[in-house]
Image (cartoon, rainbow, N blue to C red; front, side):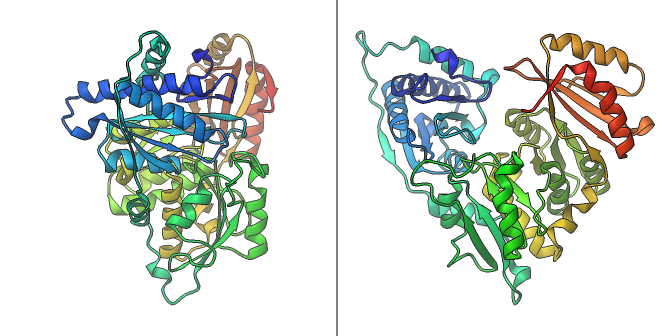
Length: 474
């Protein structure tokens, strides 16, 4: 049964079948054994290296699953620092603040309410995926027997209150001093009935008492029921409609729509238009390159060419990364980068332990708006110069054969690499490029295509799409 809940980057499934409290206890045991062994193997001598931070979101099943997880961790001998109901980036912060062996967040992120799961981080809040330890967690969890002659190792549990320190950390990225003497920046925030409904009031204040220079308009902040007015996935345009409508109706400067555990947010400009996360990466990189001239900026390889061009123009080092937070964080650390952005709405910050944070992303956007005096639409306009297909899924059984066929068809016409799937770059010569990646879990190929003009985009889509199978809507 454990195999059904372990995914490439985390543990996630429906509750209570197959994910339940008995399984959560096993997973806690497995997490503790892996994290403590990993810390010991790295030669970490801190006494806190037996400690594991545990947080949870607002889902109905989270309290009981977290209680079972904590029991499993302490059964194995790990000591738990229980930080309560928090956003996922709070756990990353706590792991580093307390210098712990790692952390576990009980959440299913953007999934519907019947789902839940666990996100695991090791030392320094480095992500634990299938290739970086999640396989070991699954193995340790599967082999523990709590029934026959099991002796608990008796780890302890401490509840920790860390909101003041977390608030100070996030607000260190916010500077609205340029708005002094001017009207506050008016921002619409849709918490999606998720953890932003807890985080935003504690860090940025509320609609009555916001931080200086800011006016907050709240949407879907109530997370007491563990239910959602709309799916907490801001990558689906229909889920961001409330934000878009409210920005226009309230004449706001900007809007933010968060996912369930508040590690991601999507930004809406003052006209009520959703901003592509690659366009936002390009618009924000100047801010970080002014702070750290010449530094690397990491971007999702599906991003518009305009991002690479902007980083280069500003004297930075553009670094293409594979899709996924495991790879983005690793690339940011390897290249000592200052900032990174992914199409999924994850934004990564060197001064946040290379980890992602929806709260810090919002703070940086507000800071750039205040300092530049520009409208949000003006900030991103230079990034919106090419034509993009967006990510399109195609169903096909033989994914490898389709990719091989694609490579044969365009061999010699431009550059080609296999950093993640295959990227065919004919941009300089013919004005287009594309990336095709395989789904890890479904018979799907994912296409992203960009061109210098609409005619070229349409022509290349007509040529490439039939090679990839049947187009699907998800």
